[in-house]
Image 1 (cartoon, rainbow, N blue to C red):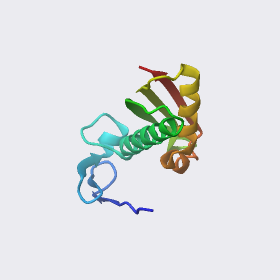
Image 2: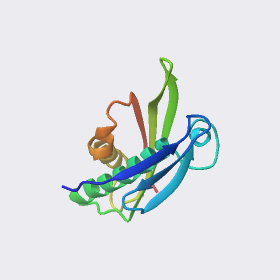
Image 3: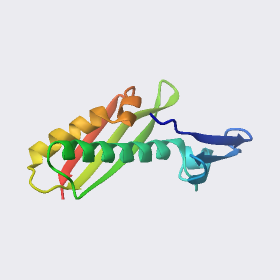
Image 4: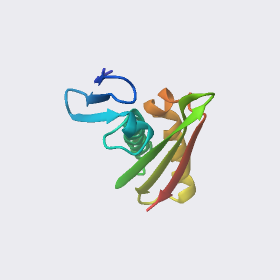
Length: 142
């Protein structure tokens, strides 16, 4: 199996400092700060990167499961919202909302939702995030 990488550098103190993040070998690079993480400032943050990773992993896993069951999807569009909350005095990822809409010929909503739940439980990023107390899924056909 593959090994993937990412890196980050932070300069300065927490509130006044700034950082840069790189995914892979520079496929994505961005800046982050206290403001982009805990307020509404410019730049990205770890939670957005987790959301993107979760949505992309889930979409691939669902596509594969559907195909394995004879329902090759035309498209699977997934998004994730990562909720950072104060838990016991510490910032904590307390909830993730996964949302998926797919174009899949010859499948009913109930069967589709079953496969979506299977993908939610089995995708590698979902498994890595198993400590998040709430991972909610909304799944529908387009």
